[in-house]
Image 1 (spheres, one colour):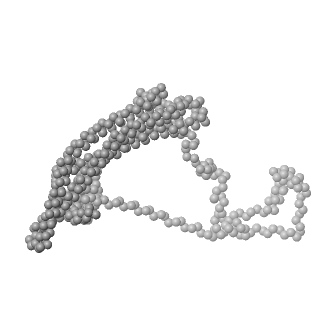
Image 2: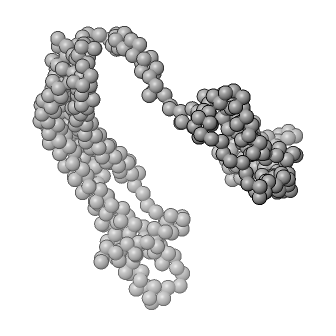
Image 3: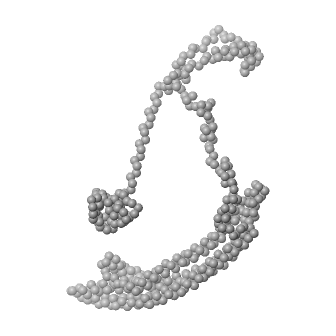
Length: 448
C-alpha cells in the first residue's frame, strides 16, 4: 500500500518532466554503467535461450535419425518380402539389411550423448540462471535508485518554486519547512543508492566477464565432444558398408548412375498421370458425324412439318407380299409355315381407318406449338468491370525545399506529398502533387 501511495505521488512529476515542464537531474557516469549493465542482461538472456536451443536441436537430431531408420525399414521391407526385390534388384537388399542396424546405432548414440547433454544443463544452463538471479537483485536496486531520483527532482522543483514565491503566507512557511526536510531526506537516499551503484557496477561487470569466460570454454569442449562421438559412431557404422572418403560431388554422381532410367520408367506408368473421367474419354473417342444420337437429329424443325407416317395396313401388306414374292424366306421366316393359314379377311361391317390429316397428329400439334413460341432474346453483353484504381501513396517531407526552376514542387517539413512517379534511387528526382500543384522534387528530401 505504501508503494502504491508513493507511485501516485510521483506520477504528476513524471508527466510534467516528459513534456519538459519540470527539471530533471542525471548522472552521466551512472548512465554509462547502466547502459553496459542493460546490454549484459540482454546478452545473458540470449545465451540461455541459445544453449537450450542447442540441447533441443541435438535431441531432435538423434530422434529424427532414429525415426529415419524406422520409416525406411517400414516402407521398403514389405516391398522386399511381397514383390521379391532380392531377386529382381539385388543391390537394394544391402540397404534393407542396413536399416535395422542403423536404427540400433542411433539408439546407442542417443544413450551415449545423454550424459553430455546433462552436463550442458548442469554446467552451462545452471550457472547462467544463477547469474540471472543476481542480476535481478541489482536491477531492483537500480529501479529504487531511479525512484529516489524522482523524489529528489520532485522535492527540488517544489522547493525552488516555493522559495521564489514573493509573498508567503503562514501555510507557505510551514510547507517550506516540511519541503526542506523532505528534500534533505531524498538527497541522502538518492546519494546512497547512486554512489553504491557507481562503485559496485564496474566491479560486477568485470566479475561477470570472468564468470562467463569459463562457461564459453566448457560449452565449446562439450560441443566438440558431442560432434566427435557422433562422427565416431557413424564412421563405425559405415565401415565395410559405404565409401566414406568420397566428396559430395562423387556421392551425387554415384546416385544418378545407380538410379539409371528408373525415374523415366516411373513417369511412363499410367497411374502417375491424371486419369480422364469416363464422360470425357467417350467424348474424345466418339468420331464427328458418327452414329451417336444428337440433339439436332431429334429436335422438331420450326420451318417445316414432319412428313406423314406411312399407313400401318400398307406396311404390313407390303411385308407380306415381299415375303410371298421371295418364297417366304425373309429374316422373319415364312408366315405360312409358322402361323398356318392366312388370317380371315375383315368383316364387311368393319370401318376403314380414317384418312391421315397432317394437322391432327400429336407430333404435328407439338411442332406447331413449338413453332408458335418465339425464341427468347439473347442476354445483354456483360459489362466489363472497371479496373481498380492504384492506391495513393504519400511521402513525408524531411526538409524544406524551394523550387529552383520551373516545374519544381516546393514544400515544407512535415508536408504530406502525393507520390505520382518515383525511381528506385532516392538520389533522383521524383514527381509528386501538393495542394493541387504537381512538380518534381529530390527523393532524398522525403521519407516514404
